[in-house]
Image (cartoon, rainbow, N blue to C red; front, side, top):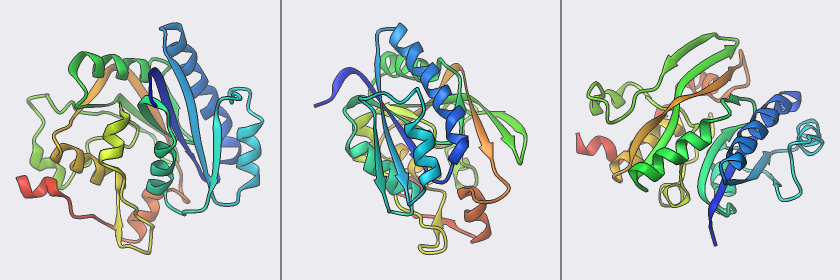
Length: 242
């Protein structure tokens, strides 16, 4: 049974090793900010594959509390890892978080505030994305209600990355589709999920004055793998409506 004031932070790990340490520090800042505003947050984490160094970095981190849980799984897919954790989440709201990124402390709180103000059909993303590491850049994510947003642009652009907050039932009703690199031929699971949720009547918004720091790797990242294997977007009902 979901707790109305509980948010489930879904954190996926896969060979982050010491990079998991600053991520968990960042998540703890968000959790403390939420608690100062009357919310609670649980961490539902997955470790996909045998990776003792990452497991030790996570379990030894002071931000991990006894109520948090790390699931050791072997699915070799980010989408299936997220789905696994979401199925076991107890919160009314779910926040999807990657195991090597950083976030503004007000990010999840700002997202939940926006959902409560606009209704349960809202999905919220950070307003600003800042890439660092192998590639440095920044850009603003567009709000779907902005007059500049064109639905047909999703045929060539993914407007929102996988860092999002929504009510848990959104993720249950529209689970991520697997995209094992080099196996299915499909990729860009977040892009596909964005399209599918719009087709089901959800609206993608951005929380003002929030940001995500996205770590970019020269190798070993899902984006690089999708590009190197010439992955394509899985068919989605969204394009049938254009």
